[in-house]
Length: 475
Image (tube, rainbow, N blue to C red; front, side, top):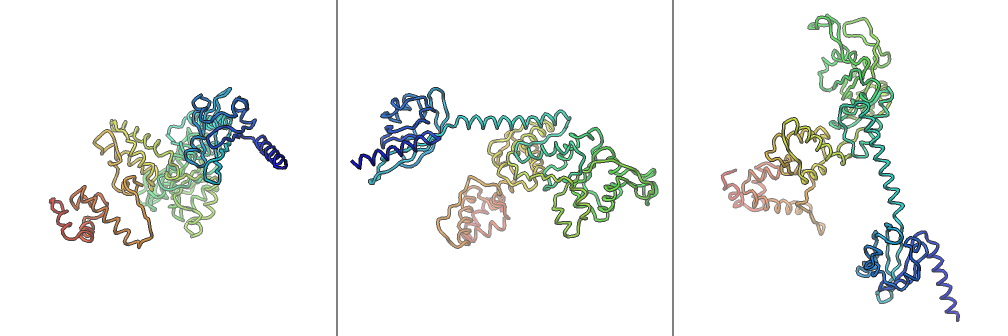
């Protein structure tokens, strides 16, 4: 009698647990026959307990209630399985099911307990979120288009979308902006974007690379000079770039290269917005917006005494970091296709990029960033003979660097490093000998000197291998 009471108590507890769950739950025996199902799952499906209990989960696939059976997978694999299913009831729902086997003492499946979560609402919310992000992106692009921006900013990655949105906000104000980023990331493109989206867009955008002009000439380029200021000065003098930016935007790229003496003169202009040409005494009021860019850590240069701290604080009102290309992988292929289209039009070509080269471009580390990618695409368009550009057309240094599916290193035990390297070199040389047959071609393929190839062949295969490899007439 007590056993019956205990069993009733356990069954009551089990039913209470099943019905208290937010998710759907069902239990089958080891063959997939339904033993119990909670009300939450009945609500999802639109079926009654009488219609479900006693039937087999496998039969639900045959009748089209579900598109696949997680219970069958558990019986076959004898382990927990999680899948998504389409459940056809009053409506079609997307559900996620996790089914867990419970074993008896002999290792046979006694029960299968499945947890079912309705994914319909979650999928709807995800779709709404995606729509909102798309609308947000379109909103910014439309604003950029409406403002008349003539350039092209590729911003498929989340990182660059944030940059684009910040650039738009900065365009609405007149604060000094410091753009930080590695060389070749497109700092001038972003600076021009800020200018063309702002209220100064109809006025000049004056750009100067502080590292590209000799120090002796940089001062006169920036500040201009009066007639007779020095030997060789032009008659009538010369207007400096700062003065030319009056009413518009002055962009100083690689400002970290500006000599300390000129840093002080630039700071004076930024504090007073007055300019005196070289050799002159008269000051002129000017009104310009300053955007600067650096490819080094200015704080570090300040700490070393190589950059004025007061100038640093003056120019860095709003910092904007431009991420390197390797941190914005989603932009690589769109940028490559953009440059491909540009150079196809420029050179009247019809080149296309194969899927293999697109994978290689995404895998590469891009130390030269967007500038390196642009130069590479131009090189490929100009030099590749076939219209289809493949991975084999890439420069050797890129092929050597890129992660490659053609090899896989498997180490099964700890061995001396030197012996592991020797074995890898030996196998690689064997393959290269079979494929190329000459030391010159092997050297080119491996990216080492011909002398190194000969030395390694001698080391691993003896003098005979060296003579054979040179026998083609190419040494």
